[in-house]
Structure formats: structure tokens, C-alpha cells
Amino acid sequence: MGLPVTSGRVRMLKPLLAAGFRGLSAAARRERPRGLVYERHGEPAQVLSLKDIHLAELGDFGVHVKMISAPVNPSDINMIQGTYAILPDLPAIGGNEGVGQVIETGSQVTSLKSGDLVILADSGLGTWRTEAVFGEETLLKIPQEIPLSCAATLSVNPCTAYRMLSDFGILKPGDSVIQNAANSGVGQAVIQIAAARGIKTINVVRDRPNLHQLVERLKSLGADHVITEETLRKPEIKELFKKIPQPKLALNGVGGKSATELLRHLCHKGTMVTYGGMSKQPVPVPVSALIFKNVKLCGFWITQWKRENARNKEQLRDMIGELCDLIRKGLLVAPACQEIPLVDYRAALEASMKPYVSAKQILLM
Image (cartoon, rainbow, N blue to C red; front, side, top):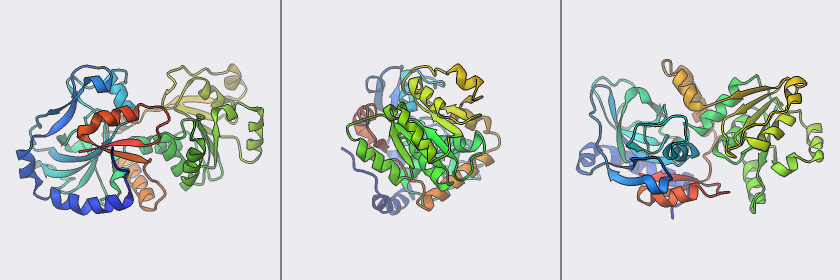
């Protein structure tokens, strides 16, 4: 089993990492890079294998990166299963985000240097590996003082939360947002970013054996209200909206009946943004919500947003900068994490696919 990621553990790791990566290039060439490779789509535990891999040529604009850690996200699983919207050519290496340190750069690389910490600016590049050569344009430098657990999980869930809270109407301090899947990586980031902006959150979760602990965890992150899906359906929920304004924004990561319940509680001309479909059910929309409340339905996918803004990365850099500022101030922390060595990847995959597991599985390279 792995060890939980702690701030103290991160502080101890950083000087070791910094010392170890200086001059690592020669050592890296002696030890073959390895990665989690799949040659066909299917269940991850059945199709993934830890294999020696070849590095691309550095070239003029390449960046040789030693990967440090990378999470296991639902989108990673879906990509391996072959059900995701984008699928890399096979054979492929799993993983869509993570943090690494630059070992060496091509002669024309200007934005990065040896020793820099970097995250990926796009998806589908394969982060479940010990080393890689990425193009300069696919990497973003992040501050050295950012905890590694935050850095490894920065480019997908916090970015999704940030954009949904920023791009779908003007939210002012005192306004409220309602979301399902509130204990997910996106949900936890929504709670913290909203709290930093003075926006109240109504957070819907599934009932479970350890519900009390989950409620306390989410409230410690800044959640104003945490309720179950069953509670959301009861008439007594109207009492809640006597204390806070009806939500202007609903964030749907589940679909099905859960999404319909969010719609019921949106204010007039409110917006529901769907970013996931954990229930694998369509979103039933009451006609009354469209006609009498004039609600707006939108979708959001962070990969598409990044690709649409790929030519001018200023918005992406600004967003990452703001998120890093929140991290520095202690206003944005990573989800509870469980570290798993890369060689034990099957344990990480198994844990990530269990119901009611709150810990994010992090592969250590």
C-alpha cells in the first residue's frame, strides 16, 4: 500500500528531487524508461503492461522530462476502455496529467530549462511513464514551491472547476452554486475556488456508510451545505433556499435524475453546465424548466477549451497562475491522495474504480 501525501513529505522530497535530477541525464540513459502501455482497448487491469519504452529524439524543440507523479482519473480509465471522446493511436501510454521535472532541453527551447517543474498543457500525451520527450508547446512551467500532490492534479480538475465558475455567467460574492458529485476532484475544487470568491455552494453527494466523515471533509474545504441526493428530492429542501439565494449556476457531473433535481432548484434564467456523466444516463429536462424558468443548458470539456486556446496560451497561463496563488495561500489543496509505486499500478487501478473511494490514486514514478 502507498503512503498518504502530506505537506511534510513533500517538503522532504523536494530537496532530494532537486539534488537527484541535477545530472540525471546520464543516469537516465543507463536505465531504460518504462511506461504503462496498452495495445488494445479494454479494462485497464487487463490491457495495461509495464514495459520498457523508447524516447523520442530531443531535436531543437523537445524537452526531456523525468515524470515524478501522475494521478489516475476517470478520463484515463475511459480512454483505455476506448469510450472517451479522444483516443490516441495504439499502442499508447496511459495517463493525461501529472508533474515532472525537466532534465534537458533542445537547442531552440526558450521557455524552460533544466530543473524546472512542468505539467502538461494538453491531454492524451501519456503521463504514466518514468520519462518522456515532450514538445515545448505541450508543457507549462509551475512554481517550485507548489506541493507535488497539488501539481500532479492541477491541470484537469481545478482547471475544469475554475472555467465553469468563470465562463457561464457573472457570479458575485453571496451568490450560490449547486453541484452534484461534490466529493469528486472537480467538486472539491469547485468548493474551494467558490469559497475564495465568496460564492456559496450547495453540494450534493450520494448517501454512503461514511457520510458524516465526507460531510466534515467537504465543510473543512469551505462547503456551505452538503446534502444527499435523497434530501434534495424532499419538500423540506425549500427551507434551505430561505437562507441562501437560489443558485444561478448548477454543475452536473452525474446526469440522469440527479441532473434533473439540480435543474429544479435553479433560479430563473439560471445555467446548468454538464461536464461529466458518471451515471451513464441521459439528462432528462423538464419542459417547464425551459419554458417558465428559461434555464440554459451547456456542456464543458477542459480538453476542448485548452485546444481552442492553444495558439494563445495567455488565458491558460493566467488560470494556472491564479490557481497556484490559491495553493500558496492554502485556499486550494489537492484531494486526499494515496501514493502507489508505478510497479504496483494494478492496486491503483483497482482502488480508483471502487465506489465511494475518496482518495485520489497517485502513481509514483
